[in-house]
Length: 415
Ligand code: UD1
Ligand code: CA
Image (cartoon, rainbow, N blue to C red; front, side):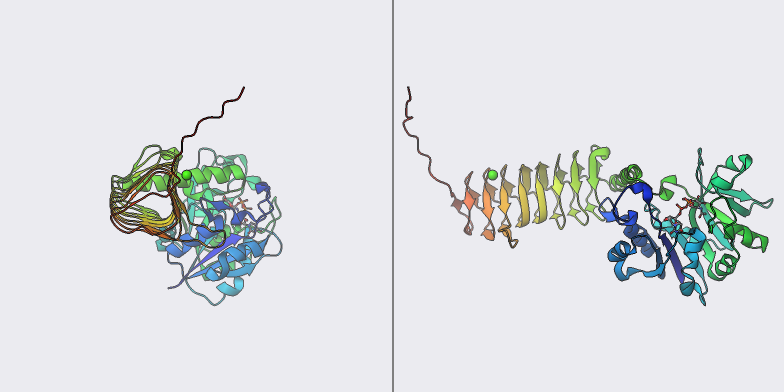
Protein backbone atom coordinates (compact mmCIF):
# COMPACT_ATOMS: atom_id res chain seq x y z
CA UNK A 1 0.00 0.00 0.00
CA UNK A 2 1.14 3.52 -0.74
CA UNK A 3 2.40 5.78 2.01
CA UNK A 4 2.11 9.52 2.28
CA UNK A 5 3.91 12.17 4.31
CA UNK A 6 2.61 15.60 5.25
CA UNK A 7 5.28 18.08 6.25
CA UNK A 8 4.09 21.02 8.36
CA UNK A 9 5.96 23.93 6.86
CA UNK A 10 3.70 26.96 7.11
CA UNK A 11 4.78 28.47 10.43
CA UNK A 12 6.38 31.85 10.77
CA UNK A 13 9.44 31.03 12.88
CA UNK A 14 9.43 34.45 14.54
CA UNK A 15 12.16 33.56 17.01
CA UNK A 16 14.68 33.05 14.20
CA UNK A 17 14.78 36.86 13.87
CA UNK A 18 15.38 36.44 10.17
CA UNK A 19 14.24 37.94 6.90
CA UNK A 20 14.14 34.43 5.46
CA UNK A 21 11.83 31.53 6.10
CA UNK A 22 13.16 29.43 8.98
CA UNK A 23 12.97 26.35 6.80
CA UNK A 24 15.46 27.56 4.19
CA UNK A 25 18.16 28.12 6.79
CA UNK A 26 20.99 25.68 6.24
CA UNK A 27 22.04 23.22 8.84
CA UNK A 28 25.44 21.78 7.93
CA UNK A 29 25.22 22.65 4.26
CA UNK A 30 21.59 21.70 3.62
CA UNK A 31 18.35 23.52 4.36
CA UNK A 32 16.17 22.30 7.22
CA UNK A 33 13.32 21.47 4.89
CA UNK A 34 15.56 19.53 2.47
CA UNK A 35 16.79 17.38 5.34
CA UNK A 36 13.22 16.48 6.24
CA UNK A 37 12.37 15.66 2.61
CA UNK A 38 15.59 13.62 2.25
CA UNK A 39 14.62 11.57 5.30
CA UNK A 40 11.10 10.96 3.99
CA UNK A 41 12.49 9.89 0.61
CA UNK A 42 15.01 7.60 2.28
CA UNK A 43 12.12 5.97 4.13
CA UNK A 44 10.55 5.28 0.70
CA UNK A 45 7.46 7.43 1.22
CA UNK A 46 5.51 7.47 -2.05
CA UNK A 47 3.89 10.89 -1.84
CA UNK A 48 5.29 13.87 0.04
CA UNK A 49 3.14 16.94 0.57
CA UNK A 50 4.53 20.12 2.11
CA UNK A 51 1.97 22.40 3.72
CA UNK A 52 3.42 25.84 3.12
CA UNK A 53 2.34 29.34 4.06
CA UNK A 54 4.73 31.95 5.44
CA UNK A 55 7.33 32.84 2.74
CA UNK A 56 6.14 29.85 0.76
CA UNK A 57 7.96 30.97 -2.38
CA UNK A 58 11.29 30.47 -0.58
CA UNK A 59 10.40 26.95 0.49
CA UNK A 60 9.10 26.10 -3.00
CA UNK A 61 12.25 27.51 -4.58
CA UNK A 62 14.29 25.03 -2.55
CA UNK A 63 12.10 21.94 -2.88
CA UNK A 64 10.85 22.54 -6.44
CA UNK A 65 8.98 19.50 -7.73
CA UNK A 66 10.36 17.03 -5.19
CA UNK A 67 7.08 17.37 -3.27
CA UNK A 68 3.49 18.46 -3.80
CA UNK A 69 2.18 21.56 -2.07
CA UNK A 70 -0.81 22.47 0.03
CA UNK A 71 -1.34 26.05 1.17
CA UNK A 72 -2.27 27.36 4.59
CA UNK A 73 -3.09 31.05 4.32
CA UNK A 74 -3.77 31.66 8.01
CA UNK A 75 -1.94 30.05 10.94
CA UNK A 76 -4.92 28.59 12.75
CA UNK A 77 -3.11 25.61 14.24
CA UNK A 78 -1.54 22.28 13.35
CA UNK A 79 -4.94 20.62 12.80
CA UNK A 80 -5.96 23.40 10.45
CA UNK A 81 -2.65 23.01 8.60
CA UNK A 82 -3.29 19.31 7.99
CA UNK A 83 -6.84 20.04 6.78
CA UNK A 84 -5.35 22.12 3.97
CA UNK A 85 -3.98 18.91 2.46
CA UNK A 86 -7.45 17.38 2.26
CA UNK A 87 -7.51 17.24 -1.52
CA UNK A 88 -4.49 14.93 -1.47
CA UNK A 89 -5.92 12.68 1.26
CA UNK A 90 -9.46 12.27 -0.05
CA UNK A 91 -10.13 8.95 -1.73
CA UNK A 92 -6.76 7.61 -0.59
CA UNK A 93 -6.22 4.51 1.47
CA UNK A 94 -3.22 3.68 3.56
CA UNK A 95 -1.11 5.52 6.06
CA UNK A 96 0.04 9.08 6.38
CA UNK A 97 2.93 10.26 8.51
CA UNK A 98 2.96 13.81 9.86
CA UNK A 99 6.40 15.46 9.96
CA UNK A 100 7.61 18.94 10.91
CA UNK A 101 9.72 20.98 8.52
CA UNK A 102 11.80 22.29 11.40
CA UNK A 103 12.74 18.89 12.88
CA UNK A 104 15.73 17.96 10.71
CA UNK A 105 17.49 15.20 12.69
CA UNK A 106 14.79 12.54 12.51
CA UNK A 107 16.18 9.26 11.17
CA UNK A 108 14.53 7.44 8.27
CA UNK A 109 14.67 4.24 10.37
CA UNK A 110 12.30 5.90 12.85
CA UNK A 111 9.82 6.72 10.07
CA UNK A 112 9.99 3.13 8.85
CA UNK A 113 9.40 1.81 12.39
CA UNK A 114 6.33 4.05 12.76
CA UNK A 115 4.93 2.94 9.41
CA UNK A 116 5.55 -0.72 10.18
CA UNK A 117 3.69 -0.56 13.50
CA UNK A 118 0.58 -2.59 12.64
CA UNK A 119 -0.95 -3.33 16.07
CA UNK A 120 -2.53 0.11 16.40
CA UNK A 121 -4.83 2.32 14.39
CA UNK A 122 -2.51 5.28 14.97
CA UNK A 123 0.99 5.60 16.39
CA UNK A 124 2.57 8.62 18.07
CA UNK A 125 6.32 9.10 18.30
CA UNK A 126 6.94 10.06 21.92
CA UNK A 127 9.91 10.81 24.13
CA UNK A 128 10.55 10.83 27.85
CA UNK A 129 11.90 14.15 29.10
CA UNK A 130 13.13 15.08 32.56
CA UNK A 131 11.77 18.51 31.85
CA UNK A 132 8.74 18.16 29.57
CA UNK A 133 7.85 21.86 29.75
CA UNK A 134 6.27 23.25 26.58
CA UNK A 135 5.36 19.94 24.96
CA UNK A 136 2.03 18.16 24.60
CA UNK A 137 1.73 15.45 27.28
CA UNK A 138 0.66 11.88 26.55
CA UNK A 139 -2.35 10.78 28.61
CA UNK A 140 -3.09 7.03 28.69
CA UNK A 141 -6.22 5.01 29.45
CA UNK A 142 -6.40 2.00 31.78
CA UNK A 143 -5.36 -0.33 28.97
CA UNK A 144 -2.24 1.66 28.23
CA UNK A 145 -3.53 3.14 24.97
CA UNK A 146 -3.23 6.89 24.43
CA UNK A 147 -6.51 8.65 25.13
CA UNK A 148 -5.47 12.27 24.77
CA UNK A 149 -2.64 14.72 24.23
CA UNK A 150 -2.81 17.78 26.46
CA UNK A 151 -0.91 20.92 25.47
CA UNK A 152 1.16 22.74 28.10
CA UNK A 153 -1.19 25.70 28.05
CA UNK A 154 -4.23 23.51 28.70
CA UNK A 155 -2.67 21.13 31.21
CA UNK A 156 -3.62 20.67 34.86
CA UNK A 157 -0.88 20.34 37.47
CA UNK A 158 -1.09 16.54 37.42
CA UNK A 159 -0.96 16.50 33.61
CA UNK A 160 2.06 18.80 33.66
CA UNK A 161 3.85 16.16 35.73
CA UNK A 162 3.62 13.63 32.86
CA UNK A 163 7.07 13.20 31.38
CA UNK A 164 6.06 11.41 28.21
CA UNK A 165 5.73 14.03 25.48
CA UNK A 166 4.37 14.25 21.97
CA UNK A 167 7.11 14.74 19.38
CA UNK A 168 4.61 16.08 16.84
CA UNK A 169 5.32 13.09 14.58
CA UNK A 170 2.53 10.57 14.08
CA UNK A 171 1.24 7.92 11.71
CA UNK A 172 -2.48 7.79 11.01
CA UNK A 173 -4.77 5.80 8.80
CA UNK A 174 -5.69 8.38 6.15
CA UNK A 175 -9.47 7.94 6.34
CA UNK A 176 -9.53 7.84 10.16
CA UNK A 177 -7.60 11.11 10.20
CA UNK A 178 -9.86 12.85 7.70
CA UNK A 179 -12.92 11.81 9.64
CA UNK A 180 -11.53 12.99 13.01
CA UNK A 181 -10.39 16.30 11.52
CA UNK A 182 -13.99 17.19 10.66
CA UNK A 183 -14.75 17.13 14.40
CA UNK A 184 -11.96 19.24 15.88
CA UNK A 185 -12.74 22.68 17.31
CA UNK A 186 -10.59 25.57 18.54
CA UNK A 187 -12.02 25.34 22.06
CA UNK A 188 -8.75 25.53 23.95
CA UNK A 189 -6.58 28.13 25.61
CA UNK A 190 -4.86 29.07 22.34
CA UNK A 191 -8.02 29.12 20.19
CA UNK A 192 -6.25 26.94 17.67
CA UNK A 193 -7.30 23.88 15.73
CA UNK A 194 -4.93 21.41 17.36
CA UNK A 195 -3.94 18.36 15.36
CA UNK A 196 -3.55 16.69 18.76
CA UNK A 197 -7.33 16.94 19.26
CA UNK A 198 -7.83 14.05 16.82
CA UNK A 199 -6.33 11.68 19.39
CA UNK A 200 -9.21 11.98 21.85
CA UNK A 201 -11.75 11.85 19.01
CA UNK A 202 -10.24 8.64 17.68
CA UNK A 203 -9.94 7.12 21.15
CA UNK A 204 -13.60 7.84 21.88
CA UNK A 205 -14.50 5.96 18.69
CA UNK A 206 -12.69 2.91 20.01
CA UNK A 207 -9.58 3.21 17.85
CA UNK A 208 -6.34 2.01 19.38
CA UNK A 209 -3.62 4.62 19.64
CA UNK A 210 -0.15 3.38 20.47
CA UNK A 211 3.27 4.94 20.72
CA UNK A 212 6.85 4.34 19.78
CA UNK A 213 9.30 6.01 22.13
CA UNK A 214 12.23 7.46 20.28
CA UNK A 215 15.54 5.85 21.29
CA UNK A 216 17.59 8.97 20.72
CA UNK A 217 15.88 12.12 21.97
CA UNK A 218 17.97 14.34 19.69
CA UNK A 219 16.00 13.02 16.69
CA UNK A 220 12.92 15.03 17.60
CA UNK A 221 14.55 18.34 18.42
CA UNK A 222 13.21 21.32 16.51
CA UNK A 223 14.88 24.54 15.43
CA UNK A 224 13.13 27.63 16.74
CA UNK A 225 15.99 30.10 17.06
CA UNK A 226 19.58 30.41 15.97
CA UNK A 227 20.95 29.01 19.23
CA UNK A 228 19.04 25.82 18.55
CA UNK A 229 20.29 25.89 14.95
CA UNK A 230 23.87 25.81 16.26
CA UNK A 231 23.02 23.13 18.83
CA UNK A 232 21.46 20.85 16.23
CA UNK A 233 24.40 21.44 13.92
CA UNK A 234 26.73 20.20 16.65
CA UNK A 235 24.60 17.08 17.12
CA UNK A 236 24.59 16.37 13.41
CA UNK A 237 28.35 16.88 13.22
CA UNK A 238 28.83 14.41 16.09
CA UNK A 239 26.52 11.90 14.49
CA UNK A 240 28.47 11.97 11.22
CA UNK A 241 31.86 11.89 12.97
CA UNK A 242 30.76 8.94 15.11
CA UNK A 243 29.66 7.05 12.00
CA UNK A 244 33.09 7.52 10.40
CA UNK A 245 34.89 6.48 13.58
CA UNK A 246 32.72 3.36 13.74
CA UNK A 247 33.84 2.66 10.17
CA UNK A 248 37.49 2.78 11.19
CA UNK A 249 38.46 6.41 10.61
CA UNK A 250 40.61 8.08 13.26
CA UNK A 251 39.41 11.55 14.23
CA UNK A 252 41.67 13.25 16.72
CA UNK A 253 39.17 15.85 17.89
CA UNK A 254 35.59 15.15 16.90
CA UNK A 255 34.42 18.49 18.30
CA UNK A 256 36.54 20.33 15.78
CA UNK A 257 36.19 18.19 12.69
CA UNK A 258 33.54 19.08 10.14
CA UNK A 259 32.53 16.30 7.77
CA UNK A 260 29.42 17.03 5.72
CA UNK A 261 26.93 14.51 4.34
CA UNK A 262 27.76 11.61 2.06
CA UNK A 263 31.53 11.57 2.49
CA UNK A 264 33.42 8.29 2.11
CA UNK A 265 36.60 7.77 4.13
CA UNK A 266 38.66 4.59 4.26
CA UNK A 267 39.85 2.79 7.37
CA UNK A 268 42.85 4.09 9.32
CA UNK A 269 42.76 7.48 7.68
CA UNK A 270 43.60 10.11 10.30
CA UNK A 271 41.75 13.43 10.38
CA UNK A 272 43.56 16.11 12.39
CA UNK A 273 41.71 19.01 14.04
CA UNK A 274 39.97 21.91 12.33
CA UNK A 275 39.53 20.04 9.10
CA UNK A 276 36.46 20.56 6.92
CA UNK A 277 35.43 17.95 4.37
CA UNK A 278 32.53 18.86 2.11
CA UNK A 279 29.71 16.70 0.89
CA UNK A 280 30.46 13.93 -1.59
CA UNK A 281 34.23 13.79 -1.10
CA UNK A 282 35.90 10.37 -1.31
CA UNK A 283 39.04 9.64 0.69
CA UNK A 284 40.92 6.33 0.63
CA UNK A 285 42.54 4.32 3.40
CA UNK A 286 45.54 5.35 5.47
CA UNK A 287 45.40 8.97 4.44
CA UNK A 288 46.50 11.81 6.62
CA UNK A 289 44.36 14.94 6.52
CA UNK A 290 44.95 18.27 8.24
CA UNK A 291 45.23 19.95 10.65
CA UNK A 292 43.33 22.88 9.16
CA UNK A 293 42.72 21.24 5.80
CA UNK A 294 39.78 22.24 3.63
CA UNK A 295 38.68 19.48 1.29
CA UNK A 296 35.97 20.88 -0.92
CA UNK A 297 33.50 19.40 -3.35
CA UNK A 298 34.38 16.74 -5.94
CA UNK A 299 37.67 15.62 -4.44
CA UNK A 300 38.82 12.03 -4.69
CA UNK A 301 41.87 10.92 -2.79
CA UNK A 302 43.38 7.45 -3.29
CA UNK A 303 45.02 5.50 -0.43
CA UNK A 304 47.99 6.87 1.54
CA UNK A 305 47.50 10.46 0.46
CA UNK A 306 48.59 13.29 2.69
CA UNK A 307 46.83 16.65 2.67
CA UNK A 308 48.56 18.75 5.26
CA UNK A 309 48.04 21.93 7.15
CA UNK A 310 46.34 24.98 5.64
CA UNK A 311 45.77 23.25 2.33
CA UNK A 312 42.60 23.75 0.33
CA UNK A 313 41.71 21.34 -2.43
CA UNK A 314 38.72 21.47 -4.78
CA UNK A 315 37.69 19.19 -7.63
CA UNK A 316 41.00 17.37 -7.33
CA UNK A 317 41.83 13.76 -8.02
CA UNK A 318 44.94 12.72 -6.15
CA UNK A 319 46.76 9.40 -6.67
CA UNK A 320 48.22 6.94 -4.15
CA UNK A 321 51.08 8.05 -1.90
CA UNK A 322 50.96 11.62 -3.13
CA UNK A 323 51.58 14.36 -0.61
CA UNK A 324 50.38 17.96 -0.48
CA UNK A 325 51.73 18.70 2.97
CA UNK A 326 51.61 22.45 3.51
CA UNK A 327 49.95 25.73 2.57
CA UNK A 328 48.67 24.89 -0.90
CA UNK A 329 45.65 25.54 -3.07
CA UNK A 330 44.98 22.71 -5.50
CA UNK A 331 41.87 23.18 -7.65
CA UNK A 332 40.56 21.51 -10.82
CA UNK A 333 43.58 19.26 -10.75
CA UNK A 334 44.56 15.66 -11.36
CA UNK A 335 47.75 14.45 -9.70
CA UNK A 336 49.22 10.95 -10.18
CA UNK A 337 50.92 8.60 -7.73
CA UNK A 338 53.99 9.15 -5.52
CA UNK A 339 54.19 12.84 -6.25
CA UNK A 340 55.31 15.40 -3.71
CA UNK A 341 53.86 18.88 -3.95
CA UNK A 342 56.07 21.45 -2.25
CA UNK A 343 54.97 23.89 0.36
CA UNK A 344 52.94 26.82 -0.91
CA UNK A 345 52.20 25.39 -4.34
CA UNK A 346 49.23 27.05 -6.00
CA UNK A 347 47.22 25.99 -9.01
CA UNK A 348 46.10 29.21 -10.71
CA UNK A 349 42.90 27.68 -12.04
CA UNK A 350 40.77 30.77 -12.60
CA UNK A 351 41.41 33.41 -15.21
CA UNK A 352 38.56 35.59 -14.04
CA UNK A 353 36.09 34.03 -16.45
CA UNK A 354 36.76 30.31 -16.73
CA UNK A 355 38.25 27.53 -14.63
CA UNK A 356 41.11 25.53 -16.13
CA UNK A 357 42.71 22.21 -15.33
CA UNK A 358 46.17 21.31 -14.08
CA UNK A 359 47.42 17.78 -14.69
CA UNK A 360 50.49 16.45 -12.91
CA UNK A 361 51.85 12.94 -13.46
CA UNK A 362 53.41 10.25 -11.25
CA UNK A 363 56.65 10.44 -9.26
CA UNK A 364 57.05 14.18 -9.55
CA UNK A 365 58.86 16.45 -7.18
CA UNK A 366 57.39 19.94 -7.18
CA UNK A 367 59.54 22.47 -5.33
CA UNK A 368 58.16 24.95 -2.85
CA UNK A 369 56.14 27.98 -3.85
CA UNK A 370 55.42 26.89 -7.40
CA UNK A 371 52.50 28.34 -9.36
CA UNK A 372 50.85 26.30 -12.09
CA UNK A 373 49.02 28.65 -14.43
CA UNK A 374 46.25 26.44 -15.82
CA UNK A 375 45.59 24.94 -18.24
CA UNK A 376 48.90 23.17 -17.92
CA UNK A 377 50.08 19.59 -18.13
CA UNK A 378 53.05 18.18 -16.27
CA UNK A 379 54.37 14.72 -17.20
CA UNK A 380 55.73 12.01 -14.90
CA UNK A 381 59.14 11.97 -13.19
CA UNK A 382 59.28 15.73 -13.42
CA UNK A 383 61.09 18.05 -11.04
CA UNK A 384 60.03 21.69 -10.84
CA UNK A 385 62.41 24.19 -9.27
CA UNK A 386 61.23 26.09 -6.22
CA UNK A 387 59.57 29.42 -6.93
CA UNK A 388 58.73 28.59 -10.53
CA UNK A 389 55.67 29.94 -12.29
CA UNK A 390 54.81 27.23 -14.78
CA UNK A 391 52.86 28.41 -17.82
CA UNK A 392 53.84 25.73 -20.33
CA UNK A 393 53.49 21.97 -20.38
CA UNK A 394 56.42 19.94 -19.03
CA UNK A 395 57.33 16.62 -20.72
CA UNK A 396 58.21 13.43 -18.77
CA UNK A 397 61.61 13.11 -17.10
CA UNK A 398 62.49 16.79 -17.14
CA UNK A 399 63.58 19.45 -14.73
CA UNK A 400 61.68 22.69 -15.22
CA UNK A 401 62.73 25.98 -13.73
CA UNK A 402 60.81 29.15 -14.52
CA UNK A 403 62.07 32.01 -12.46
CA UNK A 404 64.41 34.88 -12.90
CA UNK A 405 68.09 34.28 -12.12
CA UNK A 406 69.33 35.89 -8.98
CA UNK A 407 71.68 38.81 -9.24
CA UNK A 408 73.64 40.12 -6.28
CA UNK A 409 74.54 43.78 -6.71
CA UNK A 410 76.67 46.21 -4.80
CA UNK A 411 74.44 48.01 -2.31
CA UNK A 412 74.25 51.75 -2.82
CA UNK A 413 75.65 53.21 0.33
CA UNK A 414 73.91 56.28 1.72
CA UNK A 415 75.25 58.82 4.19
C1 UD1 B 1 3.07 20.81 18.69
C2 UD1 B 1 2.09 19.82 19.33
C3 UD1 B 1 2.64 19.37 20.67
C4 UD1 B 1 4.02 18.76 20.51
C5 UD1 B 1 4.94 19.75 19.79
C6 UD1 B 1 6.25 19.09 19.43
C7 UD1 B 1 -0.06 20.62 18.56
C8 UD1 B 1 -1.33 21.32 18.94
N1 UD1 B 1 0.83 20.47 19.50
O1 UD1 B 1 3.11 21.93 19.55
O2 UD1 B 1 1.77 18.43 21.27
O3 UD1 B 1 4.56 18.42 21.77
O4 UD1 B 1 4.34 20.20 18.56
O5 UD1 B 1 7.15 20.04 18.96
O6 UD1 B 1 0.08 20.19 17.44
N2 UD1 B 1 2.43 24.91 11.95
C9 UD1 B 1 1.82 25.20 10.76
N3 UD1 B 1 0.64 25.87 10.76
C10 UD1 B 1 0.02 26.25 11.91
C11 UD1 B 1 0.65 25.95 13.14
C12 UD1 B 1 1.86 25.26 13.12
O7 UD1 B 1 2.36 24.87 9.69
O8 UD1 B 1 -1.06 26.84 11.82
C13 UD1 B 1 3.73 24.19 11.93
C14 UD1 B 1 4.83 24.99 12.61
O9 UD1 B 1 5.51 25.80 11.70
C15 UD1 B 1 5.72 23.87 13.15
C16 UD1 B 1 4.74 22.74 13.46
O10 UD1 B 1 3.59 23.01 12.70
O11 UD1 B 1 6.64 23.40 12.17
C17 UD1 B 1 4.40 22.65 14.93
O12 UD1 B 1 3.76 23.84 15.31
P1 UD1 B 1 4.01 24.56 16.69
O13 UD1 B 1 3.14 25.75 16.78
O14 UD1 B 1 5.46 24.74 16.89
O15 UD1 B 1 3.46 23.46 17.68
P2 UD1 B 1 3.76 23.36 19.20
O16 UD1 B 1 2.97 24.38 19.95
O17 UD1 B 1 5.20 23.28 19.44
CA1 CA C 1 53.15 31.27 -3.63
